[in-house]
Length: 331
Image (cartoon, rainbow, N blue to C red; front, side, top):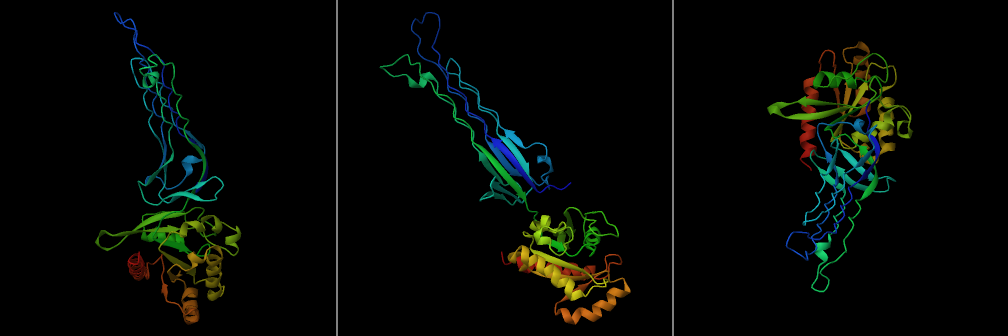
């Protein structure tokens, strides 16, 4: 299961109460106040951890409460402050208020963190209230309550290259061949039910991350199929690989325009991302015929490949590296 959104409740620890106490020692007839301060409550911290790639761990645990500070005691002993509570999430997690009215934080990189709820300050004991006039104060402070929030977490995967296309366009097969990812592959639509990340090795020990997303269908931006659920994950990608099955009986230009339409209707910013058009399944005779028939009509640079025979894969990776270097150089 791939979970990319969650609603959680967080509460920081309450501060410990201050103490009311007086010295009671032998040979000291009038001991002064010695009530210590309470300890601070634990903060709730949300941290981006690269060992996580989904929000699955937040399915069953949705309530996070940090421990409160210990109360003060006599002999001016301060209460112990509580440890912070850390919630780990994948890099790319956006933290919204529960109503999704505004973004509170965006944890893009590993080890990014934010204190989302501050622990309450400990209350003062009566020793802090002693004055020359009032030498035996009974006054103390209660600890401050810790902050609490209801949060909506949204995960947008961070990848350099996002694969888009109709179901069975060859996305899973491509990422399986060129990277260390091994998604399920079969001869029927919608085999990919959740995004899959793979690391592709390049020259001089360089790598880039490729994301295989479930296939798009007409109306995906409105909720049809699986596409609308996962389109958010290519919003952060640097470039898009638009894979088209050239062995199909459908007119290739119409297939291309259909996917472009869904991207545009979902997000104009997404539609403007740099793209590389990839003609897949070129090991099949029908694909070769369609490439000759439609290549000129698309008026786009097309890279023909076959993930089965590895035809054109080197050329495709070279084109990806070139495009990535160009786009990342603009940042």
